[in-house]
Image (cartoon, rainbow, N blue to C red; front, side, top):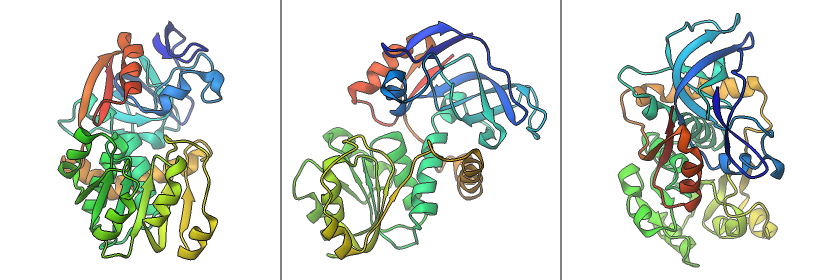
Length: 320
């Protein structure tokens, strides 16, 4: 089958063997796949992410083509959306706990861009972040697909105010369409003052940080006493100076998360909790993501280049 795989030179299109489902897995004929920034590092497996020659892609939608003996509740022909690995391909397998029937009327492209954002931000805001109605939220790096989903979930769950940051003027101007009460430009050194002003001088209760890097101390300045920071991504850098005294003085819970060290049982529970809490809102169209541009699998290299240029708003999709 055709697939976009990792190589020392980055993403390459190759013919590789079609996967066979293990007992707990579902084999899916992929119709659409969502792109994520993690795909960019995984494309060069020699950098320590991903497996050389393995198909990329963390989320996809399509039709069930085969079902493992222990993957109950699915049959060939079912329309599903999945997460896992290997979605840049004509066929991919996903654990049954990461496979969800598509809501009626959903296109494959519309569904394929949702899983990573839904799983990541429900876990960050609700499970790890312990968000309560009426608390303030800041989504750091809010113009990404994951960030836009975070704004919507926070708003739906009664957060107030909901704030989002973006360094691109055009993208920042659109954050209010997705629930932001305030849009923050973190290029300004005094941006924590904007957060303090929006929260009556108290600081934000919960920040979901997808940027990290040198901005960590400014995030803590903008955080309330007993606030929480959930470190979801490190697009701004994985290392930086950290003001331990400020952290201690504000008694901040600084929480790190990643799917890379979670067991399949943990991931199944993350998906289960998200479905119980959010799937009705997804099915009704209340929670959704804009697709900036769609490419074919044959143009996957160009799709990654477009993502690397960082000019898109929302998600990028591949179709098969």
